[in-house]
Image 1 (cartoon, rainbow, N blue to C red):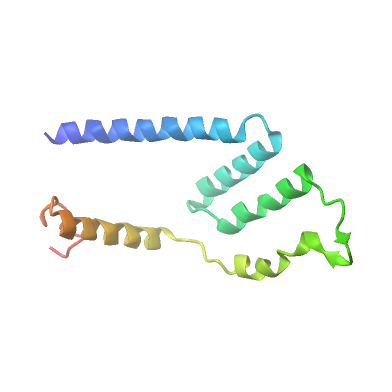
Image 2: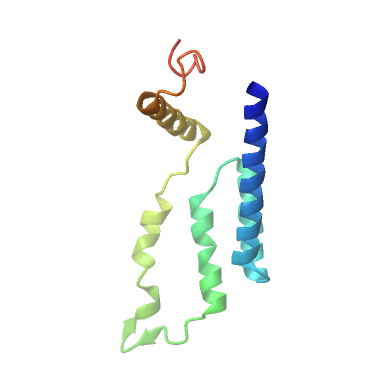
Length: 131
């Protein structure tokens, strides 16, 4: 019976990978700028083994500047294009999620599912519940 669950798990991972591939191709398309930002983020994620929110948000700036360059930075004596600049310190202070934090969040939700649905026994994962 356990082999069935391993097979189902592999199928689910395959379906998720295929859907992610299709979504990436549909979203990014043939735009070289988006592909370059995507590859930089992918390489950064692989090397650091964590997703850098600052890098993802920083990828929006060249996209914004190249696709729709600001023509009227000053219009009616207002700095319209730089309204979002006060948000930069807030964005820069966003912490990156470590693997330990993600593991704690995962175990929290697994424990809540265990308590709510009661479909996992305490013997299934003894290290999570101190058993």
